[in-house]
Structures are given as C-alpha cells and as structure tokens.
Length: 606
Ligand code: G6P
Image (cartoon, rainbow, N blue to C red):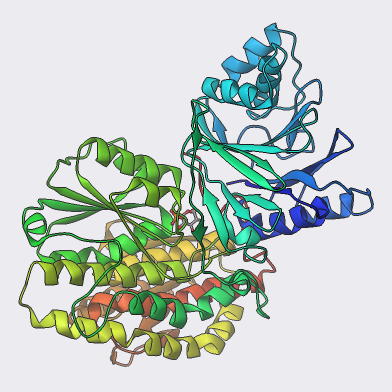
C-alpha cells in the first residue's frame, strides 16, 4: 500500500519519477505528490487523485532538478486530500519525506513535537517524521544522524525516502516491515517500493533489511545498519523483462495476466518438475524431517489463502500429513498449536503482506520450519523464512490476482509431490499427477477459448445485485476465488458456499432471477451437486455451470465446458472462466478493472 519512488542521477528527475509512480499505481491511487531538489531548495507539488492528475499539475512547472522523491497514496490516516498527500515537509522546509507504512505511535510523537512548538498541516501519521528528523537536526546532528535518531523513535512500519535541502547531493532511504528496493544504473540510482517500477531502467537491485539505511549519491551508495556501522550489500539480478510489466496491447493488465497463464504455469513447472524426481531450488528437506512432521499449516491472505485451500487435499491425500489452512490475520492472534514438528508454509505473491509476514515471525519464535512461497525475489517474506521457493508468474500488476493464483496452486501441488517423493511414498497417483501437471499449460490454452462465450454471458448478467458461487470438495475453494474476483472488481455483492451448506442458511436468499454459479469437476460428486442446483432452480435461480463432466440434461441457464484434468488440480482450470467473468462484468459496468476502489495490490499494513 502506497508506492514510493526516488531518483538521483544526471537526468531530469521529474519524468523518471512520474513514470515510476505510474508503474506502481497498483499499490495505491487516491493521491500523489513529488518533491524535487533544485538550487538547494525543495519544490513540492501534491494532489488528491491519480498520478495522471499529478502529471498534469507538474508538466509545465519547469522541474529541472536531477534529485527527487515521489509517492502514490492509499490512505490510512487522514482522508485523501491535497494536504494529506505525500511528500511531507518539516516546518522549516528542510526535509521532504515519502512514507509507506504506518507509524503506530504517531499521536504520542505529534503531541511531543507540538509541545516543542511544531505545527501540523495534515492528519497523517507521516508528518511526524520530517518534523522529528528536524528536531534532531536542530540539535546539531547532521542529516544521517538525525534520520537514524528519528527512526529509533518510530513504532510501526515504514519505508522512507528522504531529501534534505542542506545536503542536496543525496537521498537517504531506510525501511522497517515495508518494502524498498534500490535499482542501480550508470551514475544513477532508482528507489522504489517494488522492482516493476524501474525494470525498464535496470535489472540490478539492492534490497535493504529492517532498519538498514542507504545514503545514495549520484555515483555512490553506502549502506549502514541501525548503529550506523558500514555494511556491504550484494546486488540481486531481477530477470523479469521490462515488457512483462507493460500492457503489451491488452486493454488492461488483468486481461493480459489472465492470458499469460499458460506461460506462467509452464515457467513454474519447468523450474521444478520433470519426469524424474521433483527438484525445487532453495529447498532441501530430509525424509527423516518430513516423517516426523505432525502438521502442515498453510498461511496466507486473500487469493493466496485460496491457493492454500485448493491444495490442502493433495498434502493430506498424497503425503498423509494433516494440513490446515489459515488466514494470516487470524493465525497470528489465535495462539495456534505449533511446535518444532510443525511445518508452516506462507504464500504471498508480493512477499510483503504485513499479516503474512507477522504470522511467519510467530512460527519462527516457536522454532518450527518455515517455507515462503512468493513471486518476488528478495521480498520480505523470502528474507524471513527458512526456505523460499518461487512461482514464476512474472510481475502481476492488476490488483485482482489471476496468474499468481494459478502459479501458486501449481507450485503447491509440485511441493506436495516433492514431499511424497522424499518420503518415498509409493502411490501410483503421484506419477499420474505429475503427468497431468505437465499437461496443464495446454489445458489452460484450451480453457481460454471460452473467452467470447463468457463475454456474451457477462452482457446478460452485469446488472445483477447478488451472485452466489457454489461447489463441493475441490470445487469449493475455486468458488471462493471466483466470488472474490467478482466482488473485487465489479462491486457486485457475491458469496461462495460449499453446495451442501446452502440449505443451512444461504438458500433463504435465493429468489427469482438470482444468479448462482456452480463448479462441478469431481465425477464422484455430480449427483449431490446437481441436487443442490435443482434446489436453487426450483426457487427461481439462474444457474451457470462450469464443468468438465457430462452432466445429465437439465434446465441450466448456461453451461461453460472446460477440459478435464486430474481432480487435484482442477481449480487451476475451473477458476479461469470465473476470472474472465469478473473481468467482462467489470468492463460492462465501465469500471477501472486494474485499480478497483479501496483496494491495493500489496497490503503492507495490518
Ligand atoms: C491483496 C490483493 C490480493 C492478494 C492479497 C494477498 O488483498 O489485492 O490480490 O491476494 O492481498 O497478497 P499477497 O501478495 O500476500 O499474495
């Protein structure tokens, strides 16, 4: 949430910062702002609204400086407004700060600063930071010491990029529990919350650990730990192409990412699975260890949690290990029963979700092994976990996750096979599952052919007020994901239920004309599922069936046929028509598909 960027080099900073912000808009888009250092003065322009509005406000402002910082906001403290937008300055206008995160003790700090005579112009938590830096600066400390002292007073999370008009040849950055990367160019550096902002400029990035600081000059970068001791950092190479973070002819990132799924799944498979034994780079667990595991916890938020639900069955049926799936925000507060024999898997596309990271830290305190499953190399979660394994989905920009979900389900299925092979489990299903996973990219290509059909369907149902999704067994988690996609980007109320639960409450909501989407991919559950569908048809529902089975003729409103596959991995295929349905309904309603209201892609606050 919130995107921050910075530039220092020989070129004009303004266009580079605006470009970086536009690439980061998926992190927040209710206001934006920029500060440029020019002639030992900080120029500040900020506005409510999107980066486009900021660009229009700044394009004729003659911003020629080559050092600057900028911000795109997702409001936490203080509603979206010009005053609450970042950057924030201290009272003397010596420091400019952009911030991603939340300062939990801001009101205490604010009161302390007010007592010392500081005035506040916004309702944000961030504004205490430049003033606190100034407070230490006014006592005779230099820029870096003032920043270092100020961050010691902060409780909460922060990624900060800071300018000082008196030391106008540098930017200081630091972070704690919020992401920040530094791209290295030739005599220039690019600061950003996430690598996609500047993939068109560099592939070489530095990653900071909690409370590290970097002092960045045009041709030099120095790193310090929290005690201001010089430390060394290695450059990491990010092999995503710049194109992969562009729309490349598609109207929206979401549609592009839906269509990228054959390739993202293929890349995830080819990094791990062949006809021989599964090998996952960065993961080494012994038979002895796996034999003694008492339980697996899969912990995540949002779509990533749905990927966990979709694969729980494989771990239990094939590996014979009890597996529980938990929401990170609940897991961390419910005192889960974990010990050194529990294995905790954390799934996070971004690797920056605050609740998931906190849930991981909790498991580490209890000495159990942790595996992070992420799409972003170097992300916070991968630096915390004992082992990190990667989906190879490429940058996902649309707020609603699509290709990351299918890559996560693919990788988790492969991980279950890895466990089973390491445990030397002799089960013919494993060989069949491997073959079926290898066939997935072709099957996904095939499912995508439902595109035009779904587009037509969306024209008929886009005015709905409520849509229900139902499924049994493996189709239930896929229903949850379909329902989440629809509500996220179309703002239609939707809920998902296990089909068998309908008569325990939700059926009371079914009336004439309500749409019910039902997924049926498990042959063994056809009869029961059809009975549930009949129950809603009888009460007037329009039923849309996504299936790979030959269903008995019936009075369904619409059948969407998908190719058959191994039941364990069917959510990878059944979710795709639902992604498309959400997409086209949102388009019919004229909404901004990639940037749905109130949401952000990377939820770095708890
Ligand atoms: C946000 C995003 C979702 C995502 C969830 C978890 O809510 O909008 O698309 O599933 O966060 O994100 P993560 O990066 O941890 O997978």
